[in-house]
Every structure is written in structure tokens, then in C-alpha cells.
Length: 142
Image (cartoon, rainbow, N blue to C red; front, side, top):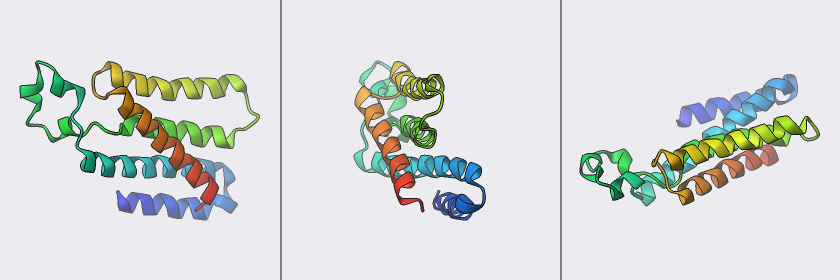
């Protein structure tokens, strides 16, 4: 993961002035990568049980390490990072496309809760990490 972050950050720096169109793509990918890195580190530290651990299927899921890594949601973080990165770079563009982008990111988070993979607080925290990563990448412009 660290090599991937380094590669995307390097591409971000190299493309900023040369190819602004690719810079936007690199910035979105970089924000998503930073969001995943942060959520995965926090998941390992918090070790919150997934919703399945509170159901009748808990004995079967108890042996899986992933069953103890619910908080925060990396899926919601990536969706939020990509959406926020896009929204930051398309100010003034078509409002309908911007609304669809927000709805798509919210849909990813909602599906994680409906699928009983996360609690609502997991996806809210993941979305906050994603949006924060996108804002940081846009502000800092590595």
C-alpha cells in the first residue's frame, strides 16, 4: 500500500502542471488511497465487531479476522474520497451530475449497512475520512 501511495503521490506531483486533466484523476486516486490507508490502520486498532457478530451466524464468522474489523468503512471512505475529489474540481459544472455523484457515494455507504457489513457509524466515519482525505489532497496539492 505504501508503494502505491508513493506512486500516486509522485504521479500527482508530475502531472499537476503538465496534464491538468490527468492531475484531477491522480488527485482522486491519491485521496482514495490515503482514505483507505487511514481506515485500515484504524480498523486494526479499534477491532470493532461487524454486525454479523451479533446474529445467529456469529459462531461461523468468529474465526474470520475480517469479522472484527468494522470501524470505519473503507468502501464508504473510497466512495466519499472520489466523490469529494470530483466535486472539488467541478465547481460550477452541471448540477445534475454533481447530485448523481453525491447519491452514488451515499448509495455505497447505504449498501454496506443494508448488507449488514457495517453499522451506520462505521460508514459515517468512513465517509468523513474520505472527504477529509480529498480536501487535504486538494488543499496541500502534494
